[in-house]
Amino acid sequence: MAQEMTIPVYLDVDTGVDDAMAILLAVRHPALEVRGITTVVGNVDLGQVTRNTLQVLEVAGAGDVPVVSGASRPLVAQARSAAAVHAADGLGNASLPPPSREAAGDDAVAFLRSELLAAPKPVTLIALAPLTNIALLFQTAPKVKEKVRELAIMGGAFGVGNATPVAEFNILHDPEAADIVFRSGVPILMYGLDVFRRVCFTEEEVDRWFASPSYLASRPYPDTPPALVGHLFHFLFSNFRRSFTSIGDAGCVGAVIDRSGLTTELLPVYIETGGRYCRGQTVVDRRPRDLVNRRGEEAVESCTAVALDIDGDFYREMFRQAVGNGSTGTG
Ligand code: BDR
Ligand code: CA
Image 1: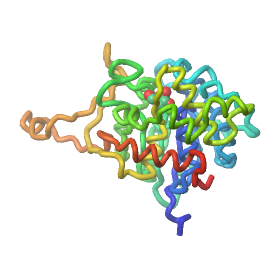
Image 2: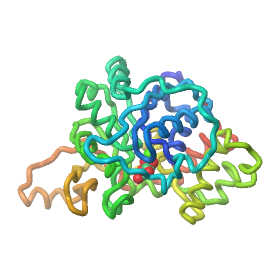
Image 3: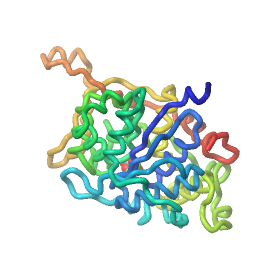
Image 4: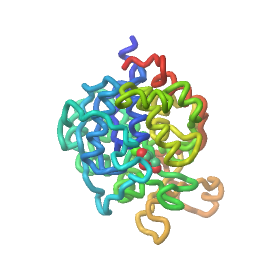
C-alpha cells in the first residue's frame, strides 16, 4: 500500500532559500514521509533558521512536522553568515507571517537519537547544512549509525567550490564536523556542487510554473508553495543578476526520492581540516584504481557514493510536478 512504500526521512537544515525549496519538495512529494526536521546554524543564525523552517512548513500546509533546533555554533570554528546569498532573513525577504508555533525542542541531537533508536527499520537522514548536529549525534550515540539507511548530504565538491576556490559552504562552515561524519562508516550520498548547480529553471519557466513578479506583487506574502518558490527564485535571479538558477538543496531531496537521474561512484573522500588554502575541501580520490594499486597504497573501502553526473531535466520535472502550480503533491 502507498503508505508502506514511503521513505521515512529526517531533514537537517539551515533554512536558507534553497533549504526552503528542499523542505517544500520533501513534504509535498508523496514518496517521502518527513518525520522531523532539525535545524543548525549556517546560512543565518540558529533562531532565524528555526523560524524560517517553521514558516516554510506552514506555507506548505505541513505545520505538524516536528521541528527541533540544534547547534548554534560549529564544533571549533566561528559561524559564518551567508546572508549575502540568502538575504538577512535567509528567505530572500519573503515577509512571511510569524509562525503560529514554536520549535518542539532545542536539543536536535537528543531528538534524533531517540527517534533513530526507536525506529523499527533504518531511516534516511538528509543533511542540507553544516554537519554539526550530525557529527554530535554520531559522537554521542554511535549506536544510531546502525539505524541510518543512508545519510544524503548536500555538501562538498570534487571540482570548484563556492565559499573558497575549493571548499563548499556547508563543509567549510564546520570542517571538523564533516570530518567526523565522513569517517563515520555510515553509507553517505555526497550530493556536491558538481551536480547541485545543474538542476535549473529560467525566469520564464518560473513565471509559468510557480509565480511571476506581478502575481507576487498582488499578494501580501507568498502564501502557497508555488508562490513561495516563485518568490525565492525571483530573489535569486535579481541577487545573482542571472536569468536562470538552480533548485540547490532540493536536488538532494530529489535524489533520495529517486536515484535514477544521478550517476554516482563509491570513492574515498577526505575532509581537509587544516591547510592554508584548502580548509573545508572534500578531497575526492578519483585516481584510476590501477594507479593507486601500483603505488602500493593501502586499499580504502569507501562508503561514500559521490554524485558525478545528473540528469537535470529529470529532477526539474520532479520538482515542478510536486511543488509547481497544479502539483499533485499530497501536502
Ligand atoms: C549550500 O550552502 C548553503 O548556502 C545552501 O543552503 C546549500 O546548502 C551550498 O553551498
Ligand atoms: Ca542549506
